[in-house]
Length: 367
Ligand code: GN1
Ligand code: MG
Image (cartoon, rainbow, N blue to C red; front, side):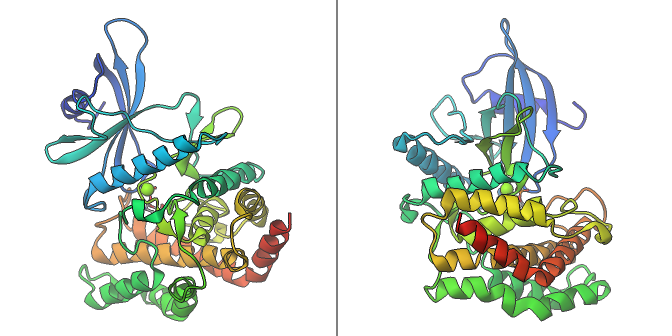
C-alpha cells in the first residue's frame, strides 16, 4: 500500500455504514481526472468486501454536489422505467447520514461496490467486442432520451463546445505560460487548418439543426465494465459528465478511443490510425440501439463527430501541455504532448477516410 494514505481512506470509510479494516488498497490509474482506489475491507467475521473509493477532482468539477445530483437523477429515471435495461449503471452507496458522498477535509469522496467479475480495457484486440460496446452506449442514450434535460446540471460548462475549446487553445498559445509553444508550431498549424471543420457540429446545434440530448460525454471503452470471461458489457461508469450534448460526440469519443489502431497516448505515430473493422462494429451496435430516435441529420453527422471529438481532445491535451500539465494527470514528461500528437495523427487518418466512414454509418442505419 505504498504511497497510499490508508489513514485518510479509513477516515472516509468511517462515513459509511461499514465495518472492518482496510486490508488492501491499490490505485486504479486509467482515469485522468479523479483519484480512484480499489479497497478490500475485512470485517471481524465473514468475507472481505471489495470496494471502489473515489475522490472527485474539484479542480475539474467545481461543484461535486451537482455531479452527484445528476447521477442520482439518471439512476432514478432508469429505475422508474423498470425496463429490461441490460447494461447497468454505476451506483454509489449512501453515507451514514444519507448523503451521496462523504466530505473529508473539504474533499468529496464516493464509494461503490466493486462489480464482481468486471474488468476494463484501455485497448480492444477483438473488433467484434465493439458491437456490444456500441450497443451499450447507444442504449444508454436511448434510455435517457426522455429524461427532461432541465433536471440535469451542466457539470462542466461548454464541455464539448469545440469552438470555445479551440478559442481557448489559441489564447493559451498566445500566452505561452510555460514557454512550450515554440517547440510545437507544426501541431499548432494543424488546428489552424481544421478549426472551421471542427466547429461545424456545434454551429449546427446552435442553429437548431441538431438537437441537444442527454449524453454521456466521456464514452471511452474503459468507461464500460466488461465481464472478464464473456466480454459482455456489465455497467456504464463515469457518469460525471452526463448532461445535455450531442449523440455525435458520444459516438465520436468512443470511436476515437476504441477504434484507434493504437492506445490513446501511443508515442510511435506510425502505429496510429482508424481501424475500420472496429469502426464498423461499434457503428452497427450503436445504431442498432439508437437509430430509432435519431434524426436523419444526427445520423449523417456521426462520422463528423468522430473527427470533431478527436480534434477537440487533441486541442485539450495540447492546451494542457502548453499550460504546464495542470488538468490531465500525466505519467511521464511530455505525456500530454504525446497524447495530443496521437490524437492529431488519428484525426488526420480519419480526415482522409471520411467517405468510407460515412458509408459505413449510412449502411448501418439502414439495418
Ligand atoms: C478524461 O475521467 P477520464 O479519464 O475518463 C476527460 C475526458 C477525456 C479523457 C481522455 C472530465 O476522462 O474528457 O476525453 O480524459 N474527462 C474530463 O482520455 O475532462
Ligand atoms: Mg471521466
